[in-house]
Image: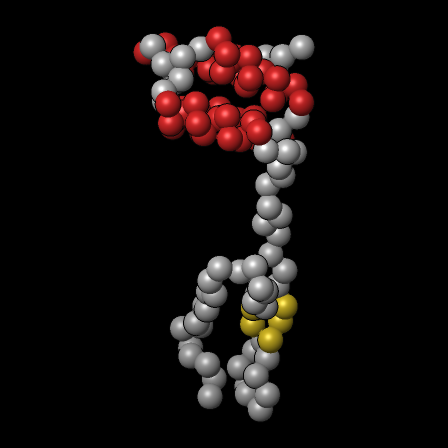
Length: 116
């Protein structure tokens, strides 16, 4: 059993002779459309990898992804909390509390200032 759309996309990607790294990334993203890559999608990508010609970077990319276990997309749900400065007439505003895994902090400023 194979996924129906992936082989068609792979064959269209290889129409110029070989699948490029960018096209391999598109194939992987298409396989991840449900939030994870199923066994059928993995089997389909392995079949495409075996039957079609890939550039060396594309082959390396796809092989590395296929060797990984059942990798899920990170949960991108952001939890907001309402903050209000003490002794301020400024209304409460939504903020995202920083976590250890955050790589950066985004601070949004209201056009009226901080109310101080």
